[in-house]
Length: 326
Ligand code: SF4
Image (spheres, helix red, strand yellow):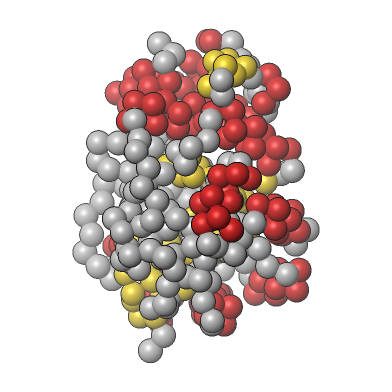
């Protein structure tokens, strides 16, 4: 029996577990199955070789082992009925990761045309070509950190990992030659300033690279333990969300914005426009591949970073306060 790891919310939508959810996922979140730790050592990650955390965790999400055949058959039904509109595959670095990834993609593709996103480290052009032919729609190579220094400290050589900022950027750019849609994940709250994050998002956007924002989440047993000031961390997150939205919608760009000691003090649009965008709410919804809403991936019931649906009036009011634009 082959297995696959499946997020608890996805198992609920597939009808393989009884899960009560106020907002179900619109994407099936999957991870290739192994009982080994990843050979890389991203310090925030539960699965890293130096981590003591449970292998089932990805940030706050729990990915449970499930029967692959049952999952792909239910996935086909959920896609046809409109409950799930995308499948997202997370990988990890171990001996047979490539064979396991290819097998999972082939099994999904044998049953359905659901769009598939693959989150992976940089690969050779030959492997990108093969993934494209297998039917991967979106390629995502997570940078996670917003600066080369933070990348090195948290994912690279200084962390005892195999990755480098340059190779990741090169992998993203090469990927764009094979896939219409290429993206990256950024974890906000690793020690970057507003300016570091906004500048990178603007540069990536100019190269047509999509950015998905995640909030730093402590996982018990993971190597990275950051002290966070709650008020500042939510101000920083909301500011980056709003700036990202203005950039991707073409309303402002990094050079239009003003920063003081790294803190954004002018979004590059007038106050009414900024308030109008906040009111609309879309800037604070989950970002990333189309149809990816990642409910409760980084959140608790009292602190929502990425809204998996449109924020309500009370939530919009809180966002205005968190950003400091009343
Ligand atoms: S943005 Fe969402 S669907 Fe795309 S790779 Fe990231 S988690 Fe998966």
